[in-house]
Length: 148
Image (cartoon, rainbow, N blue to C red):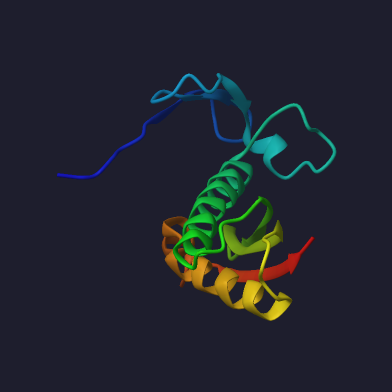
């Protein structure tokens, strides 16, 4: 039996090119529905809709923050604060698209750690993050870690 599961749903109407839909987080009351469309997926200027890459970035940043907090706590150096940003890249691939990169940037306040120790533990956390492990082998994962 799994430890946990979460559910989201998307309702789509119309063709891929001309249609649109909404994505809703079903397992939580975190929000939604969120509008989505293929034409807005690559539009960098239109901020009115979300897309799969932004949702993956949100999942990766959240998961990594939890994993890093856990690694730091197990090291007896719990964080005061972690700020995690993730940038997910969608590129063309053949006739379609592929998610090619997830760039993690973490800045932290962790009393008692040197920059080198922080970077080492940050890398350990990236290896322990379940979302990183799903992406690994399919997209390049980079990590920049620094103390604030």
